[in-house]
Structure formats: structure tokens, C-alpha cells
Image (cartoon, rainbow, N blue to C red; front, side, top):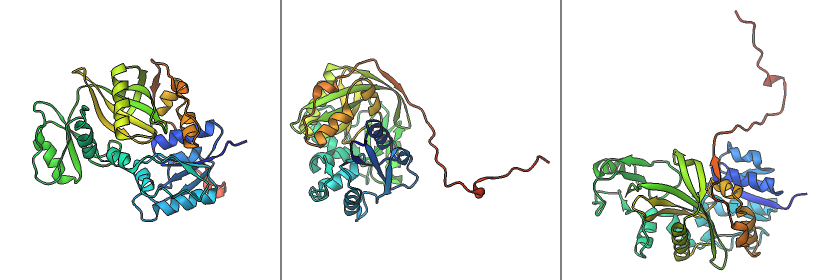
Length: 333
């Protein structure tokens, strides 16, 4: 018997795909939602619907109506831009019977805008790579010399339009070709991701993992670790930002022994299954918080030294069978 119907958006992404799979394993039915009809996450959904992208004028009403018609018990969005649209209309699901845990709009805005993120946290004493806009012809002051630079979109996620440059001239050339880019110095050190859950009282649990190997910006080999300094810094950053719900924090354990924060993503990370394999009941405790039940932070304890290696897998489906499905091969000439 199903434990309930959970709507999950962005099932075409790594986080949404993994979350749909996890919820199904835990006994929930999944309503998979995505703007892409070829979304691979639909294979883990008992029901599926296409929805508009978050920048479409009908996104919020379409999502509301879809959840209401399906009688979804809860909604989990794995797309940051969707969350910001929902936060701007906090009463969207009041009459639908669908629960949603939508963080504060200002917190979401700071997470989505990498330049604002840098300005806000650096002004409060946190170590965030110096960030400057490449839009227009203005100078980019105070970038350290003698180091590589990272150029990426001010808004956006994943590794799309992310480049490594040798000097500022190369970075400016990219800025002229692609609008909306920022530039940062490349940080030397071990890159980490922290899977975090902040309850409604502001208490955070943090599962830290090192990204041992990455491809195209995606972690393909990770290992759970413990680092007191990083955990304290992450907790302080989440408190300063006013975080709530699930999120993942990325940064570096710097070669200079410093802890550098690069971004906070207010959603499940694509690699969160490693944290769960290490013992942290991230999904179950998030659902507790979503339904306004107590979050048991003891259930978010985890083992260090657990390693996850990721690789591609294949999912299959078949259209209804008929004679036209078969392609007959002739005898070789």
C-alpha cells in the first residue's frame, strides 16, 4: 500500500531522478513533473505530467492545478528557479491539500545570484571567492594575479557555460561573447559538497563529502568525511542566510587551510544518495519537516569513509507492441 503521492519536479535532472527513485523505494507513489517529455526520471514515477518551465507566465498556476488534480500529498521541487517563483506566491497551495516546504524568497534570491551571494557573505566575514561581473566594459578589480580564473553564469546551475581561463583578457573575451557571466579566482584545494537539512527552528544537520572526481561539473566519485571547521562554517553560513529545508553547500578545503564557500543550492543535491548510504536519513527527515513533524537530527548521523562511484545506467520502455515494431533483416547479399 502506498504511503502517499509525492510530486517531484525536475525529474530530468540528477537530483530529481535520484529523489523519485528513493521515494519509490520508500513506499511512496511519485508524480514526476518536468518540462521535458524525454525526462529519464519519468521511469521512476507512477504518474507523470509535463509542466511549463519556471519562466513561463503560467508556471505557478499550472503546477498548482496539476498537484490539485492529482491529489498530491506533497510537492518537492528540485529546481531553484521554480522555488523562487513559488516563494513569491506563498499561498499558492493553500487550497489544494498539497504540502510544500518553500524557503524565504530573499534566501532563495541570494542562492540563485552568485554575485549577490558573494557580496552578502563576504561583507559578513565569510571566505567566498572574489566575484565580479563580466557584463559591459567595466573593470574587475582586486582579482588576484598569477592564478587561473573560473568564468561561469551569474545565474544558473550545473556546469553549462563554465570555463577555466589563464588571464583576465580571456575572461573578458568570454564576457563579450556570452552575456551574464561572472569571474572568480580558481581555488586550490579539496572540493566538497555538504548535504544539509535545516529544520523550521533553524537547527542544521550537515553531511560532508569530498568530490574525489568530477566530470562536466558533476561529481562521479565522492567520499563522506568529517571536518569540524567546515561543519561550523557551513552552519554559520546557513544561519546567516536564513536557510530552511534541504540544501547543498559547495566549497573548498583550501590549500591555504581556509574554508572557501562557493555556493548554496536550496534543493537536494544530485549526490545525496551517498549521504543516505552513509546512514543519514535525509529524505525521511525532510518529509518530517515538510509535514511539520519534528526533524530527528540524530537520524542524520552518518559514517565517514563511505565512497560512491557514479556511472551511467540504461532505462528501457516499449511502445505498444504491433507488427510495425519489428524490422525484418534480409539475408546478407
